[in-house]
View (tube, each protein chain N blue to C red):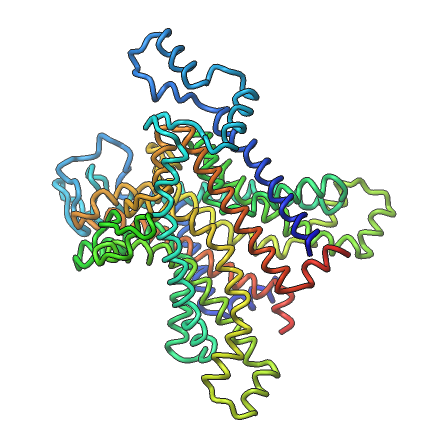
Length: 287
Length: 324
């Protein structure tokens, strides 16, 4: 573990990414406590304060660091809450997709036969269409809501995990410790999750990190198109979409700053993922 | 070779059939379009009459077979919202989407290969690093936000380019296209740039890593040792090594460019089939959604098939591997 930390720290830009990502996570977790205003408490909103530019003061004298939106909502607060929603949806969807995809992939590799064929053909079918198309169709069918967007994100992502887990497991199952486990007559479930899984983790960790960023981006895109989260739980995508209406009149801050927050989240995750890949991928290590 | 082609074509049809069931079941099984289409004040009888007129009162399997039978003759139903054939609506908007997607792919390849070559040949130079930084950003930036920022900078602040629509179109072989008029070209610039960004980054990366791999190989060192000019070494020997993966990716990615055009078209109000899809989803106009999916799925299957067959033609190991 210490060697791993040292290796990670060897790249300054990845450390920066990790720091930024921690900051994003912290901001998302603490949003209700660090926001200057509760952006969804309608009683606190003054229409008089609508569309104030960054650093302007409201009628009551409070400073709005990043300006306000069309309803006089403090953008900084809206962004912190939006980040909270986006990160939560991204993490939850990735975790679920990881659990489902890995279980199916490992089971396919272990049992083989028709299960393997079925899972892999389904994965092929899913991966031959772009993620946004599948998500759009599902949301068109299911409608709006947090649960629905998570279903859509899981449906988009499980296949990648299944393939990666299967590939790694097929290599592992030929090794002697698996033969030993079989000889001990351990149950299939025990072999799969206690013996096979821990040895397939490295590529899955790298993949999951990248996929968190992908999930956050996809959710933002769908919300931007008006098909993702409902207006009562605005994520960053919806904030940006709302700002789009005022962009042409030059009120750039309503969509610019939520976009920056989204960018910070996605770029920091990608930087961390890049480094993890460099460290964990044995092919790159040999070089 | 022929058995390989036949097998791949049959597989493609299986995918089409599977997708048609999934699409139909998904789109038709959930939600009632009646809530949206019929006047809220309509009484029970009126709703029943409208439901029967649209064929929505029959059992689902029957609806599916009616749908398939008609689909094979090119009839995918009438749009609930426009009351015209759905397939016509889609086909009418298809040239706009194809024009945008082709332009984006051309930009990605024609700009991406030279930039990637540069970054690969001079990885330590300032320009090389800048190119890679741009390509990393291109991967991370959410497409829709980039679109908004393009509008903000080039339309709102600088006032150089229009923000929405296609501009006046000229007819090319009976198909309306934007790129033949100056005004149309100006309308094309921002959406194309927006849509091209992701694939531009992808092509830069592929070209760069292909170049770095090639310049260490014996055949390139030998070409240099023969005293060939640098232009010839790079332009012929290195480039050839780079082109195969780039062309493959360009082919496969063309489908996803069409899918992602949904986002770009929504931002720039580009009157293509992607924008039509979003509008149709918002009013639950099922026949149009289904028609869009059928056409896009067919397009995808065709692209995948073409790339696959081209591959087995270029690289015999692919088909020999399967025959074994």
